[in-house]
Length: 84
Image (cartoon, rainbow, N blue to C red; front, top):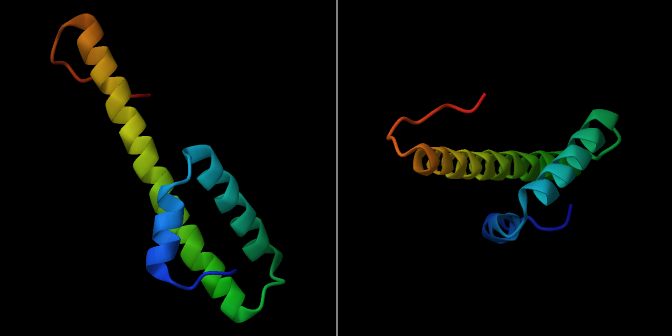
C-alpha cells in the first residue's frame, strides 16, 4: 500500500465511484485473505478497506434516498416506501 496519510487517503476515496470503490475493496479482501502481506502492509490495507467500506455504505445510502424521493414524487404522497 502506498499512502499512509489518512487525509489524502480519504480525499482519494471520496473521488471514487461506488463501483470503483467496491472493486478495490474486493481486491483488498482477497489480498488479506491470501495471508501473504507483511504485517504493516496488511494493516494499511485493512485501514483502506475500512474507509472504502464506509464510502460504499454512504454511496448506497445516497442512492436509497434518491430512489425514495423518486417514489415520493411519482405517486404524489409523502409515504416513504423502504427498498427491498
